[in-house]
Image (cartoon, rainbow, N blue to C red; front, top):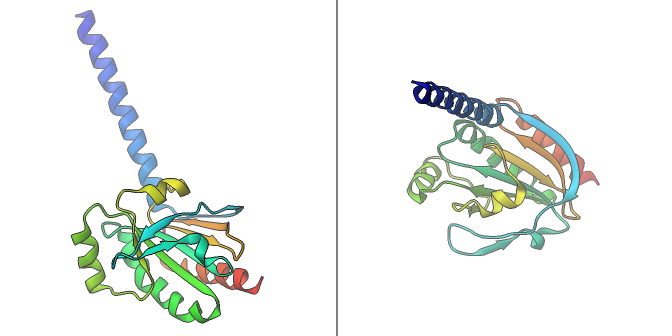
Length: 176
């Protein structure tokens, strides 16, 4: 009997811990968080969908938006056409957008991009190596990198209308 009670308490504790971890993950994923920062962006090399290598360091002198996204992420799907418009509006001003896709299945990513085409580079991060370098915690996450290669702003999550904050950050960094 004593053993059964101990097991029950342990199981109850484990379930509570699991539920708390799940709630925390959901809050990180679905609540937007923006923050100013000033730290060097980790350099990385990733392949485009056509197999070309892209290295972040090669974009020094430009303002870079690094956007981590996945096809299974509802807010990512919602923001994709909006960031495509932002890219088109600001690319002539020294702005670069790199979309790092973390989908484990290329078919799902490709199907989404077929329905929602974009002109900015999509990079494969299916193993999550670049996301780990950045310490990425939420989907989508958008990092704004200045011309010197420093992360200046991080935006976690996406809710309708928050693209205005993206534009504000881009304009600020382009003006520097």
